[in-house]
Length: 283
Ligand SMILES: [Zn+2]
Ligand SMILES: [Zn+2]
Image 1: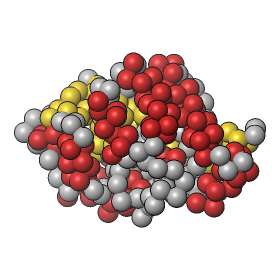
Image 2: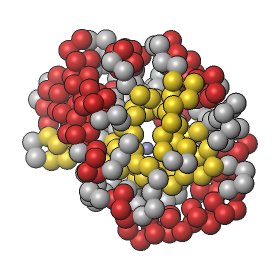
Image 3: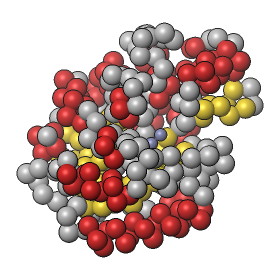
Image 4: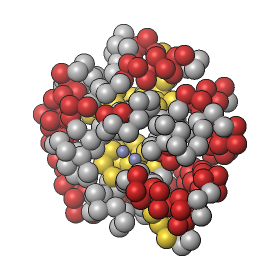
């Protein structure tokens, strides 16, 4: 690992799941944008998610990864990972030579039915009205309880990174549904965050919704980010990229935003696991 300058993105999606680009296109863009390290985090198999990898495509994903590592390994460090949905099977870590996993909640159980939080605004609104009788606080409480439950199982499930912790705010750019600095909302989020801090998990600062035009700021929102930083959370920077051209979307802005919340140390994946580096190394 080059300590003078190190740029890494561990949250990327390719054609193996719901991404637009091939793994090779992603690697070439990453090299072009000065990345020293790139990880692939295809969606693990989850029956409700038609964009997730089947066990067969997961095998191909693994084989193709190692072929590309052979081809480009002298130009960029490549890491094999998964984004583990909270509804995926347990023990996926053991289903392949995965170096890291990102645990993420994308579905919420409302009145016995699992519904996607982030698929479309229409689905989000029907989840709120049908699932929670238009009570946004009940929905936020259920969401963060789901995140907390996933976090509490992190050891068993084998993930180190918590993906986009406030994904529930995807359609809330204009604060249509709740205020970002509402203490009641922040307390709900922090209850889940504290479970992650206790377990030494790393939280993403995730710019994915910016490239897709939903948000102008990364997850977590600065109001939550500040609370998390004050509580001693660990962070990494990722772009949750679904298209090679977005590989570096808002990367530097995300670091500067984090710095203004008092965060100057970020975690990156090295040969033997996650290690802390200073922001200046990443910029
Ligand atoms: Zn995700
Ligand atoms: Zn993702």
